[in-house]
Image (cartoon, rainbow, N blue to C red; front, side, top):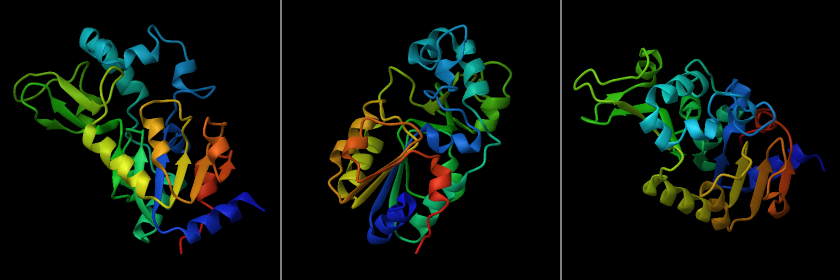
Length: 241
């Protein structure tokens, strides 16, 4: 049977769908991922990207962190693609209950999704480390060099989870609960190698586990259906009813 047709049938049968996604969801919005052949981790920089986006590097080489972060991780002109839009439609129709994302770009919310659990934070939230004043992404992006607080002069830090930092406990708990209660889990655009997030899938006890990713993942063998195509192209063909 055609895989898109089978996916449509599974979605039609399900009433508590949870989506778990990674960087591959946003590549069709021209935001580069990390691990694919042309991703950030394959490019040459003065320091390895994994090191640059670590807590230690942020503290010790703040200017170098922000040079990389603003150029390679902040895409303020990016627009939601067919995958983001379809997930928002499924939620509006009462079919999908949560989007759990490892992305920090805010495109799910821009597409209209309401219950978005951001495991790794968001470029759209930035706080002064001294007085905790909020700053939006544009302020950080357009600051000359390191962004500092207008009120107290403190260093501004993005609300993103860097290497060596812990995931937010409440977000993790809500994500695990959503997956445990789902009757269908769609995993999309993620290599499922980043822990602890990838381990959340173990809590799924529902009927249909679907993996949509351009490359094979460690969970393909467990899945009811695997589709190795760009996720926007796949979900763009789904009817919401």
